[in-house]
Image 1: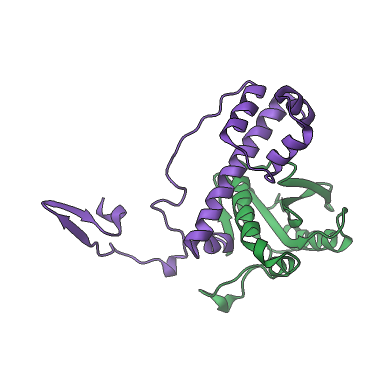
Image 2 (image 1 turned 120 degrees about the horizontal axis):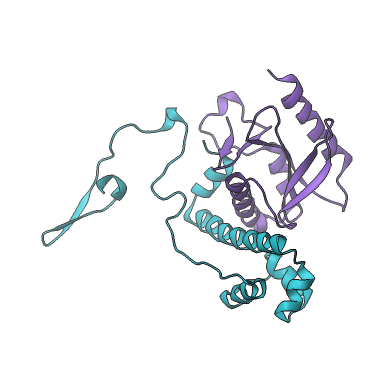
Length: 136
Length: 129
């Protein structure tokens, strides 16, 4: 399973590589798509900042800087979902109540406007329902 | 367990170096924000205490302006805190994370180079140690 374990949290991705891709280079398709909106010369900086911020989140359980972290809209159970921020790149996710100590990353997106897009919000909610309510 | 970001970092020394840079920047800015939260200090207040503009502090905290050691010391002074600098082992130093199927089992062969009567491991020095 594609996940990162830190001292406080496990970061788990809703997007997982196909079962037959063992050993092949893979990144979440939504991240690949989001990077398509960013200059190629800045991809390495984005990836390294993302790596450092997800590591910090996993090891301390939270990110404090508003340049690294944002509280987003509500989930169906009334709690909030969040975003790890890297410039205009977002990794949307939530703290799982079903799996203790897991922060799920729903998907990545390049944020075009000021506001959270309704597609991104709906995609997080769909993934939340699949993980928290449906999957055994 | 590892993820695609760890694999990306392991692809080349340049990627690993970039992640190391960003790790330190993230640690520094998060530590500053933690102290600001504890003390109930805003960016505006921090800027005033440092005799700098709010824009300067914003750029330092969002990483768009390089934070010099002098600026870090000034921020610490403004917050009444002393930065604690240590050079520890790299997080991945001596550790490898991968799926069990792909992990080699057994001790790797260690090569040594000899200088007079001193033998120094050329590679796999963790194993040699």
